Length: 93
Ligand code: SF4
Ligand code: SF4
Image (tube, rainbow, N blue to C red):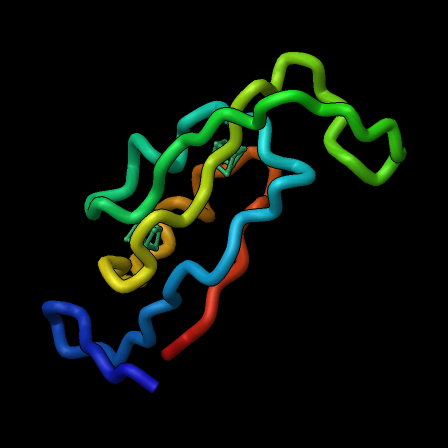
């Protein structure tokens, strides 16, 4: 596990982005805006030809956020805090 401290010396464990749930992401871009690193990228969903109920069904969500470069994540957690849909999962590494 990565050991870190705050500037004041308080122990702090970074939480690195692990995944973004594509079924609930609405492609709003909030997480992208707050990320201080080049970790996330918005991608086109393409055609949704699957009518299953467990698939994404928001007609406005034409794009979704994905993790482009997980190795550039510093584990700040800002993306998860700003996401209105609770898409993110994290792991301490
Ligand atoms: S935890 Fe921080 S650095 Fe990592 S993807 Fe989220 S906002 Fe970016
Ligand atoms: S903040 Fe959440 S809902 Fe918005 S694009 Fe990022 S992962 Fe998707």
